[in-house]
Image 1 (cartoon, rainbow, N blue to C red):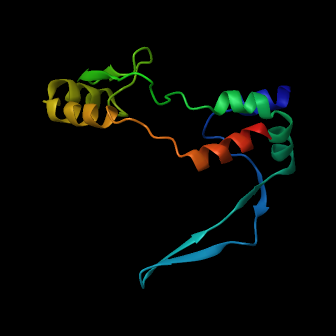
Image 2: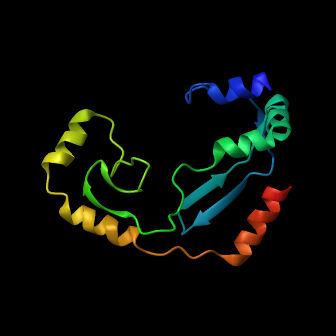
Length: 139
């Protein structure tokens, strides 16, 4: 629908209207002093309707861009050169060109070796979690 497309094209800093906060917030205690409160946000009825009416379009748009690879990733050799074979991926997010320039000038060999070691680890799929995910996607 046009409204759904407009909502997806809105800038990321635009905040969706919420109809309220659920009453079932709960406190979790870690140790004797730290208390964390978890709260459930309830979307506005129009937002909830858009999400349920356009599930297929939404699922196409929210799939992650960088999925696990079925072949070993390329070794990192520069801040903008490594890992995925076809998608360009920076070694880390930067806000300013100066940060990227500093990475290019610096000795990043140790960082690249560490990232290569992490990237070479095989993924293992949790079969029970996969069954739940498949059931949710089927609905």
